[in-house]
Length: 434
Image (cartoon, rainbow, N blue to C red; front, side, top):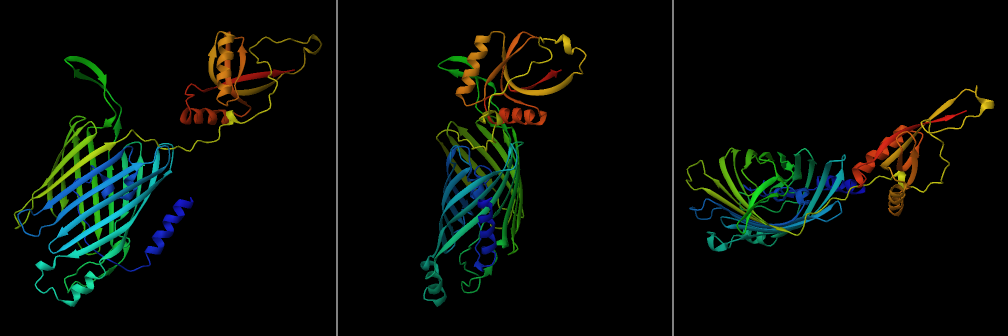
């Protein structure tokens, strides 16, 4: 909660500061690397390096060109992630270079749903090619260039569900740098909320399946690695107070674990076609966007991804297990279904029954096996014990006993969710007293 409070405090502070605006670049390959738009997406299950190059209006001199390199990874066995990005964005006489570092943190919403919070910060530098300016001695240019290194930051949130649904919101320009306006490179003050990027997408993981593989001329069946489901859906909305808001819908088909095709429609620009290849640790994607205007020059977008290391794991918050708490050994009553000794002098006494609930892990027909497994549980710091069921002639190894059914059910749920004791179950025993 302290981390969440810090994020909210930053947003409130930034919201009170006047900053300056610049155009935020468009990535046609955002679905390959969502981290470009949202720092919360730094929590990737592998370490990834992505290189992107976007050539806009290739046949027109001074057309926008964007090149970026990024790195993102989850810190293994934690709920934290880091990332970084360096990009160069040139358009006409103006060039922009920025470098940012990101930190993301995961807050569990439920067992399989997470809320990620991400914050990026860095510097940005603007430069002007004076050789292409009609009057390089203009004082406005000198004033602009004297303040060309400025801070830059962005904030993002991402809700990630095990069902495959994801919802993200980001503020791409918390500290937006000075931008040359139409009037003598004048700066325009804006709010961080003048640019908001919202994305919703469906991308579900599926387990590996048996496939035919040829290796050295031998055809055999092997289990493929975890992959994305055949269909992925994306929807983006970029709000801009400047009036150039955009909306985009994209569909992606994973034809195999190595090849995909897709298409999108962005208002007001038009259509985009996508295709890509994935082989071992490498990913290559290409996007083609025909320009629907008098410029008659298309847009090309290429992305290359490299996967590093092994798959990372999220650290899950394990609840306190009652079966691992130190307890004082208690005398076990004889279960009703076991043999009992009847007192003939008290045979008419009213019988009272008590229900007791045991969290049982395994049962054995041999005491030696049951006792050996109990010792293994004790070595793993569980309260292992054994009782004999006369009814089915089995020895039950249990790690918790309680008079409350809710406590037993909760312990079984936690054991199945957070430990390797997936066989845990509740056994009710009725204890009789005279």
